Image (cartoon, rainbow over all chains, first blue to last red):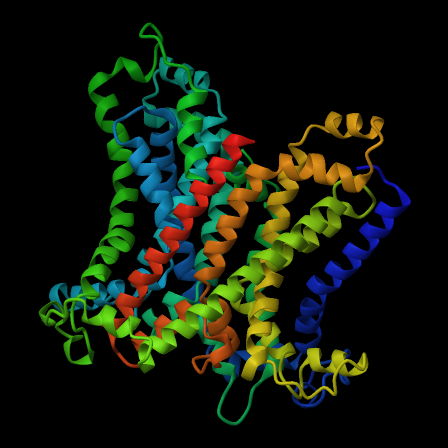
Length: 279
Length: 326
């Protein structure tokens, strides 16, 4: 592309329009979280009449936000940890070994990701109910049920992405380690993993984001005790009031951990996410 | 995502190894079992949460699984094709609802994918040559994608409120409407859905297309410039054809995502969805959990799966043939 006058005008228009499209909701979210309740209940204003941080304090009392926060954190961290470990092992197998059934495995695992969630939501719900009836392990309405479910959500993509990362690490490195007396697992731990660290971080962030933002299963599989943020934030709408300023404050606080994590690792993340489409 | 690429890369990139080389080949017994051992946990988890439930789901669609049989669902009586007949009987309330919801979803999906692609392409091209502030804008454009879905959608919900929302306020200030439009009920619900979904999705198109643009060799453009081709012609004759493989995957992924989107309608409307915004996954969810009629819900899910598989198959077939010819 040459930077002609026409191109500069085009660029200016595109960036202003899309910049506003992206920024206005973020701006509304931030400023509304700093408004008193009467401001968000009246006609919309661009700027708070009285700048206040009260919504950030009140939001913890209106709904048990702290509990939802703890639930979401436990579920997302545990699902991420398990998912990353499983993905590392599987990706190592796919990347470093030739074995019968490898193509079947990668194809099947990847295609499960394309299926809509409702498809297995109902049966999974019933299976969980049955496990409870038969084995006495409570999965519906507990964090464990969500952890097991979420761990599989990011798994296919994590395996695929990590296998790509592992492939880019020369095999000579882990072979040299094995000559020096490491087993294959030692080579994975000491050579492959450290070299693939950006990939592992990206996969971990992806898994965390998936679990942190999940709505469908959380709406069915949770009860008051294990409710996560994605469902809990709805509770600010009561019969008598909708606390929009507190909703926006809570949405902001809930978003901060993922947005920061994402932006820090975005380079690796973006490379991984787009690699498949571009290759 | 791109299954074909995944299969091709590891096998093709690695030449067959000689026996004299040290390493994994030295341990034939371990070498044979280790990969399966490494895969076992992942396979087990996938089986438990995805594969087995899907098989159960298909079974469910052939039994009368109403609320009377939930507690002891394996004893539910067979229904044959009964659930499918109910779901596909378009003269009846259930079938009619499914058909309408399908129509809404087709429109939603096509418009959202088209808009996301156009915006993503426009931004990717605009951000291609380096300029001051490019990195910052790129990061800013990523925020909607990074935000948890419900946080972004709740913000839009607030902005789309009739009396207190930003959207009506802006439209009134610009004299485009009197500021009393309903956005979350009635016919506008579909417009709102498309706007919110596009807000979140166009960024992904942007990311992918941006990465695609970077892989096009610069000398192609230089040669075209020497030949006197303007920017628009360069885009048409170089950029678009070079991005063909990227676009094929991107459009398919966007389509599958939007067609099975649940978050947007659920967070935007709650459980009382307006008919104009009744997307199919949300419709199935309501049909199953509000009426506790799991059998019909399962039949609808299977129909949705079959539809998605047919569309994907045709798409891959048509695009595959075309790209081979090109």
